[in-house]
Image (cartoon, rainbow, N blue to C red; front, side, top):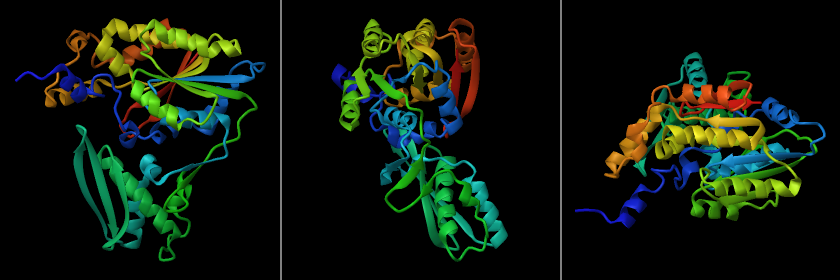
Length: 357
């Protein structure tokens, strides 16, 4: 029996354009923030003209604004940010499992991981409970078994660091960047910034998500607008945002995990047009998280499981397995960037890249 268009649209929601609901529950903002280190922030903030007293940032594909607001906070130089309990699993410390194993072997503990998973909106969420000598020491949630286990190990290291039972001396957990101060909150230390005013624009094609972002936003210097980046209206919104401060472009443009959705819906030519556009929007830096081809395959597999049609452009794409290299080469050769740098890899093994003019 044929589905109605309304039903199809509801079922496809988020899986065609990437505008997922509750996106930051399965891909937390901290997965990207951890790569914007003090050194990187100082470099990005200081690389513009010293006579420029403002730093303008644009976050393209901002969803409901969690990452946009967190980036703004980093660059405004707040000393502390208190994150609620449901953000405690947002940090991914890859070496936690190996460090815990080292302690376990040295002190003859019995280590046990109990892992389960369930499907949440077509995406699998993995849970891991960690026991030492049959005593519960921590749990972790992640998009893979590896990430869930690392987060559970991170919690266990924190407990061992505080426990008088451990005889490890200087704990390996001491150098973990984020530390849990209590059950309910954790503190993220951020450096003091320059005296520049920071203004941030977040855009997304989903009006509902932008509505949620606006509800969260308490700052006059952060603006959220619903618009499709591929339309001329997006250029008009950018100009309107920059006009009051007599600027023609942003210092930093961020595009986290959106290249695939542009590519799937607008084809090869649309991808290049998008790269040209966001490159023109910045006078200095582009922070990009391009999805590799395996993400395309998974996105289409989800649609097939949901019995939804694949994007029309998918079968026409010429750039597939080499899509990341194509994006990097195009930005360097055709978009005016002089340098590129890999800032790191997320828990989903995606590169966070910095391109600079």
